[in-house]
Image (cartoon, rainbow, N blue to C red; front, side, top):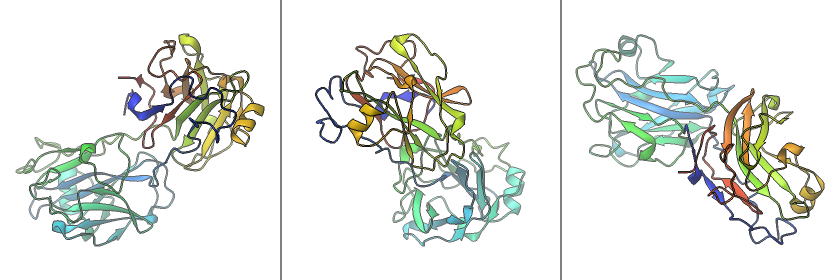
Length: 353
């Protein structure tokens, strides 16, 4: 998503933590370290049932959401004509960096004629028709899917006969199919086409936009202890990050606009790690029973302050409006907290809707 959506967040309401002395005993506990990071760094982004002789090119496009050093843990399969899964039918190989899109085709000649380049992989496992579900496997388990494995797609909303389906940017892998994450050409949309570039309904080749940041703001807390502590910004890693120093945080206090990056992180993180940035350690430790990852005065936020995440000096994620005092706004978290819903992605533009 290119804009922040308040529906991606859960808010405790103001004064929700008043009187609490520890998070575990609070009636409205901060959902500490509960943001669920997707298990797969690869996603199905498109399928094509082509118009050339023999119905080629038949294509499954996969894009890397983060760097993947070993693609062999991933594979694809198809469930033909509603006949249920056949399991993993082809394993990938090599490596990929974030943003790479890989093409798995049933053959090479027709693909090259249509797209002007060769596919990344060829396998008969990509011999899909427009009524077949497609599965992505990781370590033998389904982590993403297009369509329903036990349903013949003919006449279904997800049918792509002589056409294509393409994943909307901002989607994440899921073993449960959600048709709203996809755009469909409609059946017979590519009939008569000889190349993608000259087709009236071209396949949106390699157009899936991968989020630039592998770190995300997942929560903020304006605490109930003396001095309003703990004051907390929680950040979670969406993928492995070898060097956290490219990231930093800042706050825009009382609607006064951004002050830029005020604190830089350090160290490294693996996918799923959640880091805590607090204004001080003692109150945080009393409230949560453990020390924060980092302490800095840059985390001295109140419930009306916007919070920014920076990557290489640029804002890549935000809670709130930097130029608006949050008092009385829908995103206010005075004496309370805000927490990001699992499945969200970073966005530099806040949109409360």
